[in-house]
Length: 188
Image (cartoon, rainbow, N blue to C red):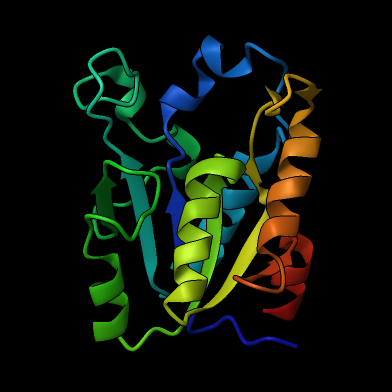
């Protein structure tokens, strides 16, 4: 049984832009209940006074719905940060690049991370890889993450479930421990 009472919850890029129609051009997303599950974890972390970090993607691309000043740049309502919670803006896929995240975690003596958010195969995967490489005990909550269908290198369409499964396989055991929210809550 793992003790998550001192772990920081890192919520990555759960912004309104993720609902833009172009994300689903190749097919639907997986885990339609991810935001509700993330909201449940936020309640647990808030009730326990545990550290929470919200990561916001601030795109530098003019046409991006993630660009500051666009409606899509704001957090989704169900997982919006409280005024007392730290928000870290980023411009790359990893929450550790160009932010104070590592320093803030180290200064607070936080060695364990619970990571949730979107997209599993992009910003979540990049952040988890760096967290593992930096020596953090990292847990990725697979049903609190989601992605979209996309074509592989050879042009074959892969479902969101397949894309997510490959990301999880790439990460589990080397960079993190993949768990689901039911286990996380049960172990808490």
